[in-house]
Length: 285
Image (cartoon, rainbow, N blue to C red; front, side, top):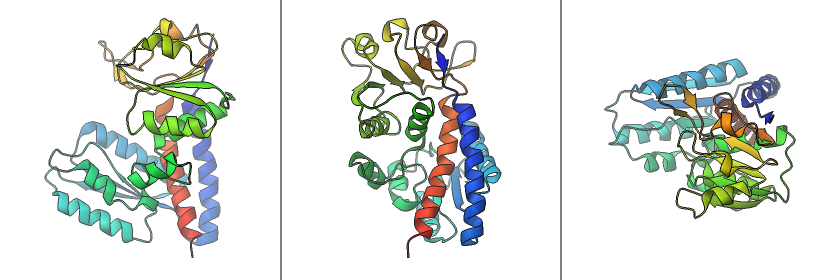
């Protein structure tokens, strides 16, 4: 049986540690870190995510500033709000919940956030700094994946890591993080030739392709550690990952579950990014 990489338990430990850290920071600097969360419209899924993030902030002692805007909010209004948050000394991190309504350019909004307050790690400057191996605010899900691997004692240096999926928010940044840990990294996708064969040669397989139960036993090997980033609903309405867990788990060395794997770590890393931004700003003359 595989070792189960339980992101939920690790996220709880990280959040507990952050709460203690925030208590010390408040005593030192006189205020708590602050995260502004902006949601445009009332998409049910977005509302659930936003509420969970605000709740997590409260539990960690982080001040949260929620902005729930109507669907017809103009792009100009949103850009002006971001400009105000960029200038607000009490706001250390800014998160704009995606997706945005069709009339708003998501790229333009992402670029408008000050890089030093980019809690999501999506700004091109942070993406560029990461690719150069420099200090950056890193996208939350990739950062959480790296924490999961390290906390599980999985050796990274010199290992063959395959990333299945090439998105800007998971696949590409997690590849950069693994490179920084001295892995040999291959990025694959739906058009990769002999995809199962390439994946089966990996020591570490990160799966973020967005297709339920896509990874089957012919993608894996007994010495492999798998991180499953996928969140899908199958025909019965059950939440499942991109990996066929029941078929693959008996074969591999380690695997993260869905749910209870990467998802909770993403929120924990959002809190961590906010505290990181706060510390950098407070330490800057």
